[in-house]
Image 1 (cartoon, helix red, strand yellow):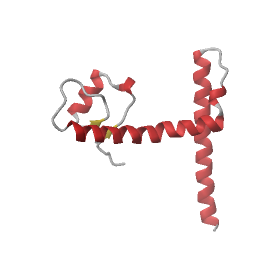
Image 2 (cartoon, one colour):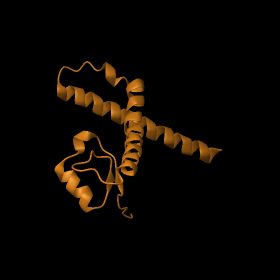
Image 3 (cartoon, helix red, strand yellow):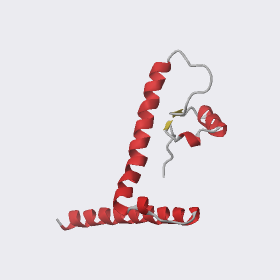
Image 4 (cartoon, helix red, strand yellow):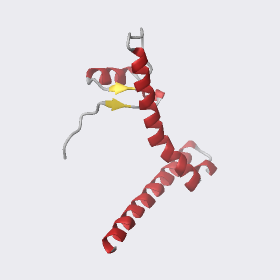
Length: 114
């Protein structure tokens, strides 16, 4: 397997720590992190790039989770503790992944038969 160097990263605000800032700066990785300190001269272009990264991240990760919330009903979870709530979400996510894998396998079988 070949390794690919990461060039762009999008993340939620909770992931923006000094440790992560140092890592992405050292490895020359572009991010959508909120800037620290003084704004650079080319901030308008940087702001546009950050907006594109944020939009793409939100579309990919939160879009699929929103779809799963509608189909597998984790919004109806009546868990009494934080641990059981996480367990319900865990099983809901894995159920969605298992069904997706099953659909892909079925599509491949249909292509082979046709």
